[in-house]
Length: 136
Image (cartoon, rainbow, N blue to C red):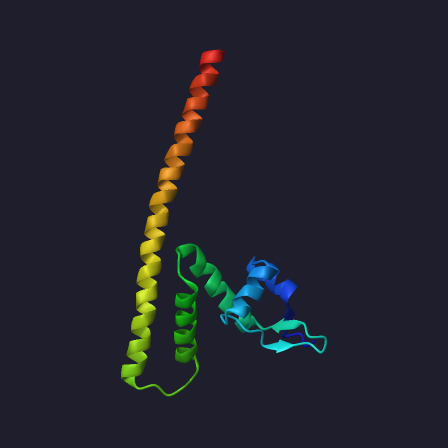
């Protein structure tokens, strides 16, 4: 195994994804190992890890597997060095903008939920503090 390849266990540790999740993403075509060892083990590169990190960041924001696949295809095409017309490049960038906007909207919703959760936890702490004062 070359030093530029990692086995699935190391990839799981780097991405904080389970082996099962990484295999699922392989089965759905989101991330395909760059190589296989002579023994048949999946081998990944830093580029594969970067793809998994994109997926890991999209998942909690509610993006579907199809949306993840689409964004990865768009970024692959933009990064491929392939000659694109200005119209093709702009159309791809517009799709990326759509995902950025969707991510920003989800982040705002999560901030609201987090603020509500923090308020609730503070209310409970106050309640416990009141009860502690009352019993002493």
